[in-house]
Amino acid sequence: MDPDYFQTGRLTRKSDVYAFGVVLFEVLCRKQAVDRSIDEEQWGLATRDQDSIKEGRLKQIVDSNLRERISPKCLKEFALLANRCLHNRPKLRPTMAEVVVSLESILALQGKSQVICSL
Image 1 (cartoon, rainbow, N blue to C red):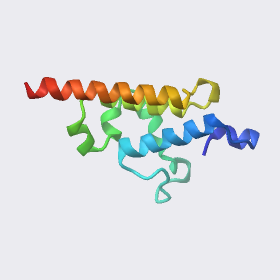
Image 2: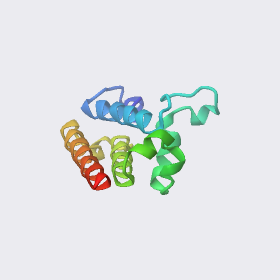
Image 3: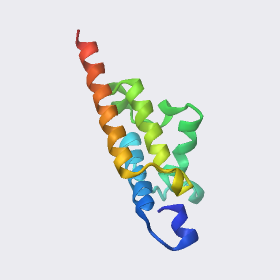
Image 4: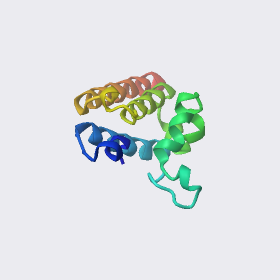
């Protein structure tokens, strides 16, 4: 849930961006957004793994199958996009239109990587 919602009681378009960022993290890590089997402070996937991306420890959180199939550059860009969607300050989150453009760019980059690898 968007942390800003707890302060304002309002859901906004930026709340949707935050929620989509959580989905991006679920895809990246191949884990559910909430894990109640661990310490309560670490339940949320987004809060748990955001620091790993900021600290350059992407390999520790990315699903191993995904890591083998996607170029490192694409993984990094995908993770950075997910992180931007989860920014605590809604004004610093991208719009959904910007998210779409970023995802298209990442997909194109992956396509180029596959062509280069198959040569």
